[in-house]
Length: 364
Image (cartoon, rainbow, N blue to C red; front, side, top):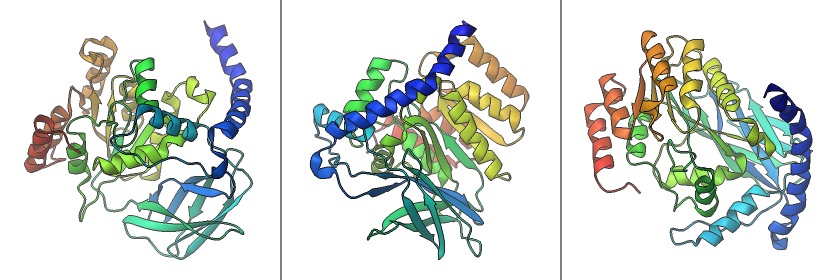
């Protein structure tokens, strides 16, 4: 078995190159001819501290993706998904950015990705900021959102698929059908998740940041962002993955790497970790608890697969309990909200809001 895994890992680079070639060939047919021409910038969400911020994005050839509506047919959503997946990336392009009067420049890599690093002249205030991006030699600017984390009580790190958005990750055929034929208006959140996350984040004087770490490809960034905004789920930086054969190499390393970066970037911030039982979230989060003793306030795992019967997860829950961290196996958002209220992370009034959201009409 080990020899098979070794051979698979060795073959991945060649297979990924083949996928890249096929991707570029197919995308020429998937993207409408009228969409080809000038370059566009796809910024993601910048994040950082008052003393340093990074903003990632991508340089692409234009693609036509129609705005989502609740009445869109599955075929129309599927075409839009294909246009996202088979995008045309452009490397070697100089991207310029300005944030709070500070400029930064960088060249996009072969995958079209770029990361701008800003070091402000003085500390930036916590909260949302806006950066202006442009392509060297091209007219026009693209606006990007940047979140500066300061004076928070704690942070939240959450998975997306089958934690926030119903994705059927336990069944590959259903997952593909859901992901490829839905849009930001037709995809469904779990009941109560919006109310729970709004309570944890608490928009106002004290803003607790939320970070989304997902195995979804960056090509779906706009869909996921629109989904969160439409469903009134708190916005925050998204950390997704590259599209290609690398997705088959497992997602645990990706999640652990990103979470490690967040813990190291914010050494004085404690976190609540939220995931589901359909992937490896319980195992990954348990490793985080061991690495960063005393900095994880709670672990909430949405139960999708009868995890209560899973001896491995139950063992992990016992191990974490001995370190003073509760791993809550929650069938719905209400169980997690009850624990959060008991810990003082949310108020009784906010708990009642989650209760109404779970038992009442579905949130938009």
